[in-house]
Image (tube, rainbow, N blue to C red):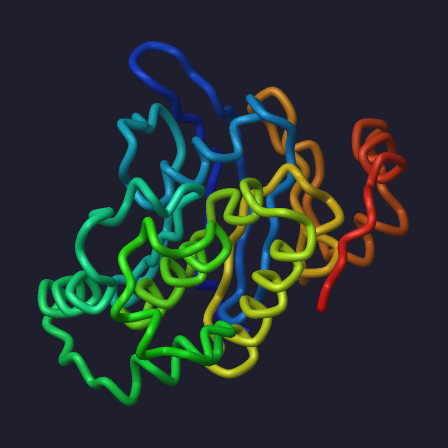
Length: 240
């Protein structure tokens, strides 16, 4: 299978401060990868370095992505990405127009239904403050998916959600991967979510990748003591 993302000896940070150091891994097209680590491990900085926003400065190494691949980003807090007083329909239309994509209501409603928003017309007529955190997160994912990204970058997309809603979002991301073949790279502090979601798992601590490999291998035969301790503390994830 073709490699869609290749990270080679990447070091990056903010200003003169290096946050991640000597990171290397590859992602195959159509696969689901979760990078797991506690707060401050550098996983979100890694994601920002890949999509090129957030003020992250690359100091060493390379990030290789085919030129025809669009990166889609789903933030941790969708509230920061949407105007709270404009309808989602208006904001989705604007996002599509700015990327030279036609607004096709049937396709938009179909995408919302894939993400569990069955009353698509109501969701589109709503403003962010009128929807729950879980629904806003799904609207953020839907908006990004309508841009037809080759790689979907998810930054702690379940961290602000309750366990049941987080499980629903994970199921819907799996459905997107299955139906559209979208490559997904998610950073999370929750190894339970990674165990449900990932084909490959990377474990980060203090800005370094401690181990990376097939999810089954990492979960059943971890080599690093930190990974072993994470596995002992995994809570159960409810999935509807």
